[in-house]
Image (tube, rainbow, N blue to C red; front, side):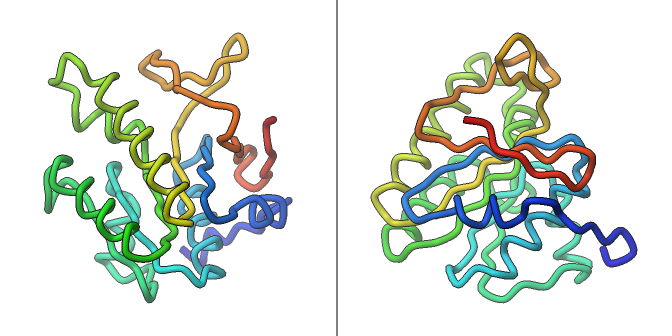
Length: 182
């Protein structure tokens, strides 16, 4: 991780907007920049971290000990099924506030690719997490490899990302620039 060291422009903008009972979407173009940014965010957090890894990049760094974090609970679908992970997350955040990182919408769609109702399932999971985070004073970050087309955020598979006005939208571009969309 260190040889690809990135200094993020506007990191303070992101940090100021990660507040309890809040959900944020994090759009990225480069998966390694996303991981580096998440490492920056988590290193400054006092909350315990719940990381749900559907694209397995973060899990690889943790398992190989290239990333070490105290107070981290890591979930992925290599070790559990989605329907086992979600109740564990909801239980943990009902007991105490956490930083919950949901990485990524793309990976969840890939996990559920054989399910006819995958769009509904993905949206239901995200809405359930966002609602429970608001009750528990937790923070939720949902990442997605996505692009903007005609004022809508779309995944590479063409699916539109469900958004609401309460969710902050952050974009990592050019590997180091962070911007916020209102």
